[in-house]
Length: 401
Image 1 (cartoon, rainbow, N blue to C red):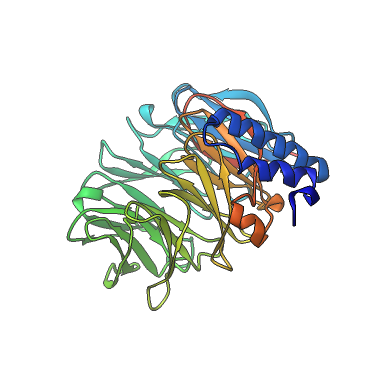
Image 2: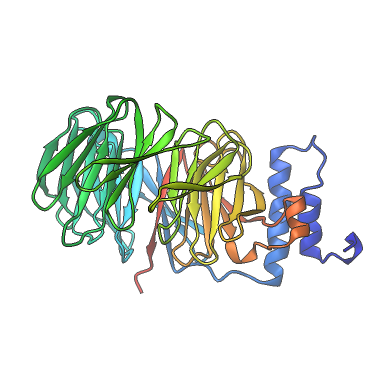
């Protein structure tokens, strides 16, 4: 198809990727905005009936974006710099962590802080059990795991850890669980806690470890082996070592797809993403080139896309999970540092903690076309908002309707 036959939206998208190398990033983004405006003239997104709650770690507030109008609303004061926001399954409440004062704050769908409580002098990470009943928190300073009631935030139990915690994951609450798994990083210890009884088990790895992730059925625990650049599979809850899987890259970022049947791994050592099947046998099904210096990742459910941010660049690479093909590359400002998607798989939310921005990609507007893929222009920005100082984490809550 010649350029004379490209419609207005496609023409702007084509020009965006034919720019002279002397153009500045600001000009790139400005022209990208023209592509979005033109594309939206053909088919506008309806937005998502909810809010993005964004932890801006350079402020003492949570930024709020109305995802139906894509407008920045008044921030929510939490009294200290926040580092994380998580939600319950119904997305009616957000739980905000302010690590420096060891506190958790509950925000309801009316965007009001309805409860705050200090759990410890310092907290590094929080998670919510799948039944929504307990908040699980880690303290790196006190070497402690805490269980708190999700409604009152009252601490129910404290567990002393063998060393400084690095990563936390929770299994699904069922007849045998839920379990909490903790890695101690340089200490190389994996610790597993049965949250109903307080029972615990330990397993010592031979070197430095990273993230831990439960398989969807809770019967396997995958451990990032940073010492040997691989993944180790342990039984749960027995913590018996059953498989070691070498990788082409350091397993720094782990991301399951929507049904947790595939695990995507990125990190230093290769400009690609390893696609791991976490069942028997544990195997790398394929390693796919995915942009430059792949880092943070997120998946949409339908369509099944993987969004991969560059660690050293300013783009997000889009991979079609079903075909294993790269279908787009989107410039999002400076450096994508956190990615998530809306629950309806309509929008990708990309944070840049250096620029203080939220970039939005509209998933239905991504065009899967071989000609477009060759020019790397299969997608463009839907919008971009300045949200505050050092946005580092985000979660989506639903409107109170």
